[in-house]
Length: 196
Image 1 (cartoon, rainbow, N blue to C red):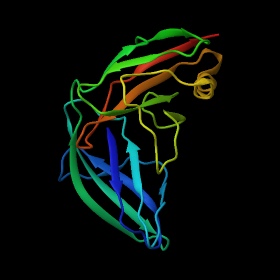
Image 2 (tube, one colour; image 1 turned 180 degrees about the horizontal axis):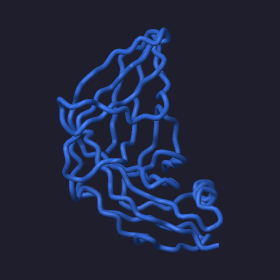
Image 3 (cartoon, rainbow, N blue to C red; image 1 turned 60 degrees about the vertical axis):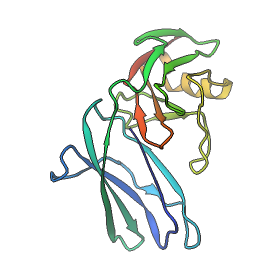
């Protein structure tokens, strides 16, 4: 699930944490391992996004955004709810568990169910909590998006992916997308191995 937020201005803001629960009145659990650093300032805000891969299609989740200032004082915002669509993004190729050649770069394909823009994620962790590569590459503030339903990594991106799965280790890939209203969706996760 792609979570996004925007600030108008930021004064003494150190950064953000995200908290989630499956019931609005239940105890919230922090889902960010590290503080998402602030990028805005007193005269300008910034846009932020976070990929929550630990979600199940069809369930509704409740989120709170915590901002923390340089003094360590927290302010919570929300909650907001979001439901991951059951069939919003379907992965097509490479198939789950596929062994792909080291060269040329693999073509990744999916069906986006009327979604407008996409990002492709790779990780050595099926929950995407460590060692994550998001494509296409771009700055955090002005990230690029894929507008079609397929993507071939360039040489530099493919080298990063190969390095992530070096020595035949299993990698995981998923696609996140947004619709016209900016609502985010995430596909299920597929396994991938590179043949060396």
